[in-house]
Image 1 (tube, rainbow, N blue to C red):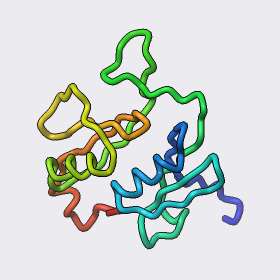
Image 2 (cartoon, rainbow, N blue to C red):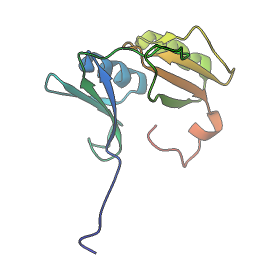
Image 3 (tube, helix red, strand yellow):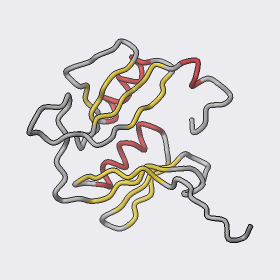
Length: 141
């Protein structure tokens, strides 16, 4: 089947006014490789995988980017998506994320995860998943 259609996930793309700075934040948070691609693009990917081997997080420059309001409020910029990260030690991961440049959301809705904001204001979650993250079946550590 040489003509078989192939569709594979390459990246999850995130808008930012400063894509290089946001890539450096996620690179530090995840301990992933950072590639700066011109002035308008940057990428992070799992170490040792070579860019494109596994899905990455891609950051694109958008001078009109406005951070979402979370939790949502009428008439405010809404989040379109957010990233979840599995962690084995939640409070340690929260402190590490803060060290990398994240902030904690004022409102939290569970003891099992923490809603955080990256330096550009995108929400992301650190999720307590010790058994999953330590599983042999979990990828991209």
